[in-house]
Image (cartoon, rainbow, N blue to C red; front, side, top):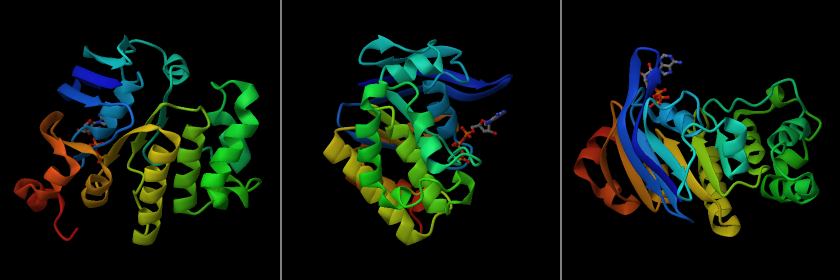
Length: 235
Ligand code: ATP
């Protein structure tokens, strides 16, 4: 469904991705793990068109989306919940969700809002509250909810567990599983929290210095000695 082929990308003279290949099949949850600075965020951002790939391509359902503008990519069914959540702090919860729906058919708005608020009842209680005053976990829910408002077929999630307490992390991962299972949304998840992310995933990839160095099923990677030593200490 989503295929990344020999992708190169970076920032000016800094090359962050050196030929990355990743594929995510329909209905899968696929996780990419890696240390700080490995290039995980850059990969998700390059899939969405910014920064632009300097070589290689990104295919969505076999269609080349590499040089397409972001709003077109969103219309084709790809949504991105970025790192650090990037919600609109001064806008209300409802306004944030409306922003997520701008590329969607307005006739679906009421249904989509209902679906997102059923998934995240916390947001329902806080529709008029400013985004910036939500707790970390609530902001993460809002970021995922906003991405879901465009009715994506593929959801890209950048470190949804970042900065959250263990209980909240567990809840967020349960919700990701639910979105995948009940709504049929394909998920590509980037995480430093390797243990939870691999447990949840059907398959996973490991990225080191802008290259994929290892791939396998979630269970295989959890068993892998190298991964246990580097990413799962204490996990
Ligand atoms: P983290 O888990 O710490 O977020 P990451 O795996 O997501 O790390 P990236 O944020 O993709 O890694 O960074 C990959 C490389 O690109 C790093 O060397 C980083 O310093 C560099 N980089 C990221 N953003 C920029 C930017 N806007 N300008 C210049 N270099 C950048």
